[in-house]
Length: 135
Image (tube, rainbow, N blue to C red; front, side, top):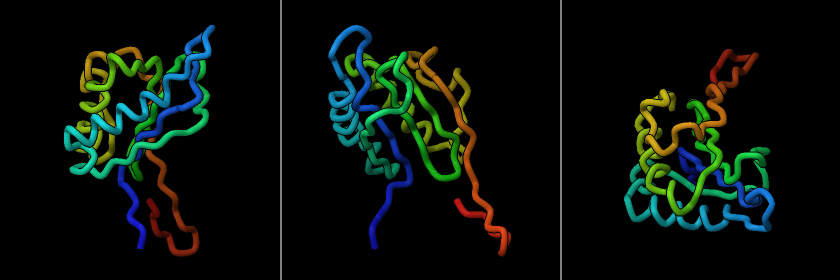
């Protein structure tokens, strides 16, 4: 049986710095994965770090999302690999500890202030024929 991570961090690998050909998402993806592993967040909190081609945050590159079943999803923009890695690792630890994933801006690392694009409520699916909640 395949093991699936409880928490997923998705990085846009196609984001471009405006007016340049620079695509920092691949570097951010590699550095974040390495930092989470070195700090023990990935193993202790069951995180996976993945890339995707686009998350439609083109005006705020580089974009990154934090997701988990039954938790709020966060989308951050204007993320810089050189300055925001530690804050993202800190946020990952906070996010993992919250049963619903919800944080206030004051709870998030200070350097992520103003970089939150969206907090999307948790999605729960209901099976109509059995009335079961599916996460």
